[in-house]
Length: 135
Image: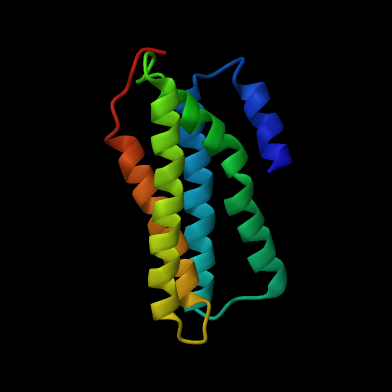
C-alpha cells in the first residue's frame, strides 16, 4: 500500500485524480480476476494468493485518496457531512457484504474471491457512470 501511495504522489504531478483512480481500479480488477480464475481452475498456491492480495489491497493506496478527492469535489459547501456519509457508507456496505459472505462459505476460497471480484467490478462500474467534474 505504501508503494502505491508513493506512486500516487508521483503520478499527481502528471495526471488528474480521476485518471489515476482509473489506473488503480484497473490494477485491482485485473488482480481480482486472476485470483478468482486461479481459484476456479485450481491453480492456487500461497505465493500467488499473497502476491495478488497484496496488489488488490495495495491498490487502495491509489484508489482511496483519489476517490476521496473526486468525491469531495462534488460537495464544496458540505464537505464535513459528505465525508461522514462516505465513511458510514463504507462501514455499512462492509458489514452487509461480510454477513452475506458468511452465508456463502463452502470450505473453499472461491466465495471470498468471488465477492472480492464482484466488489471490484461494481466499483469500476460506479466509476464509469459517475459524474465527471472539471479537474
